[in-house]
Length: 309
Length: 249
Image 1 (cartoon, chains in turn green, brown):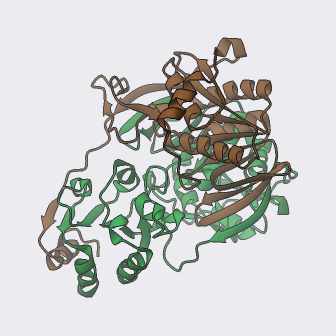
Image 2: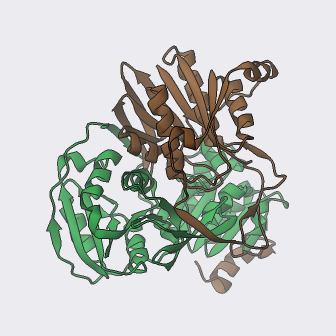
């Protein structure tokens, strides 16, 4: 039996998390196929075909798949699901939206946010905001899984898999796309960034958030993240939130500025390679996970840091 | 329009759970329990829709042990009109909960079901989507804005990269994200009132639902510990360490 990876893509290019998901799929055993469900997505399919270890790319291309509505994408997956032992999605907003719908329609459990494949039916996944790791075994005939991208390496390039066009399912009529507001940015995406500069409530305002963090991020070529407190206070857009229920990141370098380090925030970033914390509160829990702690007034030291880099 | 809201009793968000030494699970004896924060947002949203005159009745549902009655009383103190507990001591996984909720939806015929996007204990993020699937309804997950009128619901969703708005014909399932609303504080008079609201108890068997878990928890372990590093006295030392020791810049 083969494993199916549901690709995430946009404007003809494959999103990074798909590549980590392919790596997880290769650990499940069997051939790995990638499904591209979308519209005008030939380029994304070509990219997927180049991923190492991919045996076949299936392309369902139709206008009703353009907006990636959960009902239509799930139906597309179900149309081809019967030949697969494993169906993997990246644990992104899109993957989390569609995967449970597929699982329930197949009457199987879904295994969320796996961080390790122990055996084809046994997986590790964090629970309680990463404060415990559960080893779970599925007894279902098909394993529907979402994969935490930061826990798996990206699949390499250099493959040359065939692309097969498959017929697209009809529009479900159960939901319709209205609009999308995308935060425009030239910065790297949080999910795949090598360096992340992240701000908390201590920054005090949206103006200060940008005034201090943008120059630092520019210097380091970093993505910008935020704590929930900073997002709730309106200093940063919602999709910058890092934590248990926001984005999970694991960059080479994570610089937490004015973030106290609630367990929910730590859940989203504690797998970073090197963590730097800048906070004036010596008791801030962020210092307990930081490799380098700088106990100081951020308004003084962040500009100093920018100048020193 | 009738709204059904699902609520889960979980370990409170500010409790740091401990893994049991036998690897059999986490120790939740004597820890503070509360309503899952996302579900509180779901109840609040339903109550606001009722206050706007869009909803006529709100039914809160919980699945689990006897003590879930407390969670349901909280939901009624926020403003739900009545409650149903599907009582069982069995471990309930999301697919089983979705099926239990479907059985209640078939009975109650709500036009809208609102759930939290994720429970903060098992972090699954599945039940709402699974319920939509077994009902064959549309779904709008991770909502940060909900507007219901004239047989449709328009939902703004928090997605990677920004916001997305979708419009669904009713009936539909909506799951809540953090910024949909800020739940009100429950007041003492409302807590007293909630005690008098009807709370019905049913069993999975009576609803004809098989809740047998599909996944077996083999072991629960501590995550790898990350130990605190060093405090640096100034920016110059920090930069030097990042360059020479950590080699990340």
